[in-house]
Length: 224
Image 1 (spheres, rainbow, N blue to C red):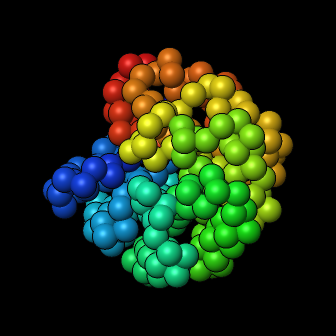
Image 2: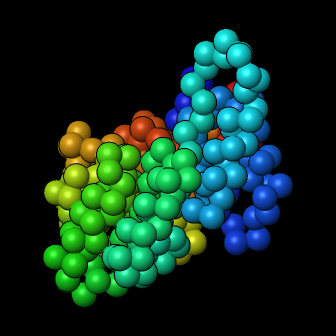
């Protein structure tokens, strides 16, 4: 099984440099990853790097990697207005998809209307770009995982996503299976956080993930 089309090749470390982002983009082109996932300040650079890699007047027919921008990352605790502004600028800079982090503390406090509004506003600001909602599953009990997914579906999200990779917890087969069952085909599931080898990637896809976010994409596809 070719896993490259499932993978958002990811680099979100705070110490990532422009040279690192260029390398990420060239790896995505070389291996055929679905997309690159970067912090919003790097969206324009990623866009230009990918565009510049294709010679002018080329008959290059392969789909180019999508540019995925994270918003409100990694805490989800920025104001809704700040997330919306970040989303607008990311889109203007060339983002194709938005991965937003929910305000986890508000969900834990039972303030579901706040969470729903937060997601809805980011989706509106994205103006048609697919929005993935990171629920930070490692911080939630099962009931709140279910409610987070239900709120994302109600808001109109394209995906629910397991984790940022910066908080406790990582993508698990159990969480992906629960999330997939909860959304019941009304949106898709992206697994991210701690996916480091081919066996883990395959298990998460088998559980219901249709996209994988990982910084180990090269290792995963090379293992084949």
